[in-house]
Amino acid sequence: MRLLLVEDDLQLGEAIHKALQVKGFVTVHVSAGKPALLVVEAKDCDAVILDLGLPDMDGMDVLRSIKDINSDLPVLILTARSSTDDKVSGLDLGADDYLTKPFEMSELFARLRVIERRLGTSSSALINIKSVSLNTTNFSLHIDDEPVDLARKEFMVLKALMENGDRILSREQLESKLYEWGEEVQSNAVEVHIHHLRKKLPEQFIKTIRGVGYSVRKA
Image (tube, rainbow, N blue to C red):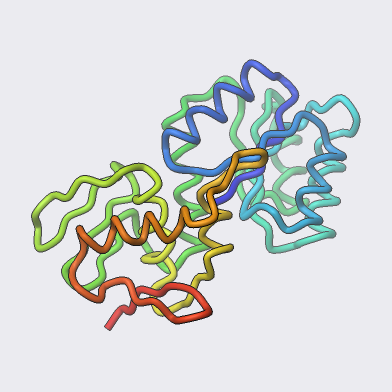
């Protein structure tokens, strides 16, 4: 899942950014409301983590604008405003969740997993297709109940494909789930990850649809 993190506290924002990276999220971090809206308008994120205390716009106005642009885009408010009125206002404007500072990273991750399950095809942190079982909480892969080691970006590619079982994902769609703004993308990066995954997975588990992309079939 590609996240837009809107947080003007640069130290906190960087800490959240790094923690999300470790958990396999691709994150775009901006520190103000106007650049956040540009990202939303460009359709360059799957969900938003939004601080309300921003330097250029009130966070509630940013939330209202996000929902005007894309009413279905999930927004998790992350803020020091802890009053019931603020929570009710945020939820009434369309926020999907509201987490007050200070917070534990584990709780943030848990709430993001709820959003992620809603966006994907999986109903839990465990995705099972045929003999392959992927746990998105602890980043583990089992094939026929035997553990298999995966590199971080291999995991991210496989997770995207399994969450979208029976759907075809293009190379560009997979790249968007792997790389952040400004990160150099090698022209054959996705193909390399697919090649390594195929050595670890059952034969024909990942199918190539020539000229279109890749798919994992549920049946």
